[in-house]
Amino acid sequence: MGVVMVNNVKNGGFNSANSAVYQQKEQQLEQTKLESAKQQTSQTDTVKSVNKDSVALTPQANQLKELQKRISDTDAFDSKKVDDIKQALSDGQYSINYDRLASKLAAFEFEL
Figure 1 (cartoon, rainbow, N blue to C red):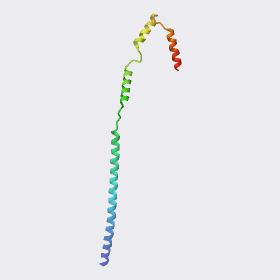
Figure 2: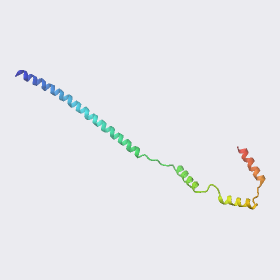
Figure 3: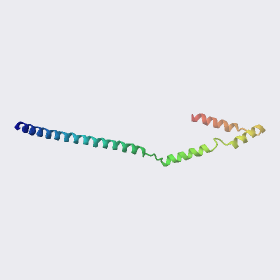
Figure 4: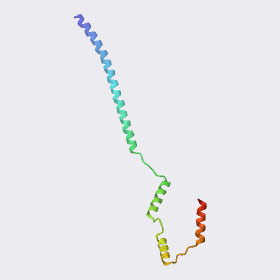
């Protein structure tokens, strides 16, 4: 019976050592779970912040957008003026000022 008691004391000591190791492992496991949860929360927050991003146009960009809209709504040329010139040509009433035309062509060539 004395040997059994010694074994019980040794086993009791061994079990308490195992218990301490077990508790330490449990704490490490809990810490790992907490870190994992924090990382997932951080990733979720990052995704949410990406979804909340927005773009704001500057006043100049808004003006440019408005000008582009106006241009697209207007004709590219004065159709009434073109029709008048066509009519004058067909009637033989369109006159060309050759001196003015020559000076404009020369000025254009010098600009190049």
